[in-house]
Image (cartoon, rainbow, N blue to C red; front, side):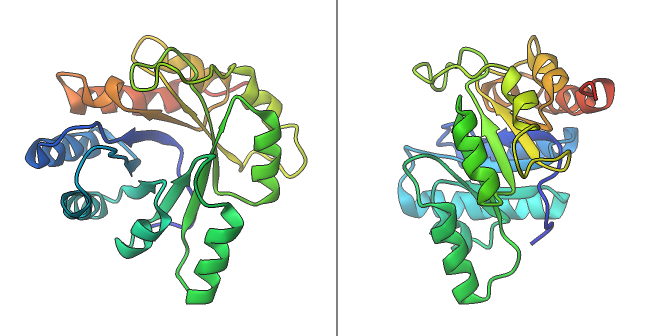
Length: 222
């Protein structure tokens, strides 16, 4: 494990590429550019290959001091000694994962949840003491064109909920690119999760550096 808290900044999510060497090179470039966290998310790769590729990306991230998160599958995350798991509405509950972690005496393990466009889900996530809350899609998404749209005001509104404070980590996701990323950061996102806007760029290192720079340039109003 490389951290007990989820860091602010660029949160990369792997694209649906099947070329393992291409994935490894792209992740290395994103790490060099300033990515703080990588989420392994792959829906179409065969399980055995996916595990091997994910393990190789975990090693790249670990060497770079970048956190490695697994999407949906908390058991795979534990098997890979990942830094945490990201849970959606159809995945295991936070309570289930924490219970298993406690029974195994596991080291610190980050849990993030998707709250979509729902302040109610965010309130429940705060009660569950999740490590980060993700809202989205903030903008039209090519990866999930059917995703509900989440207003940027959710970041500010979440800060007013019971149990929330400035240390609560809020992540924006969905359709984020160079043209709109600053809007999410200005609205109060501590981290922005990017797929195509990062790995679809010709200069991945440069794109990562740009997104990372936004967290120095723009701070939400107090």
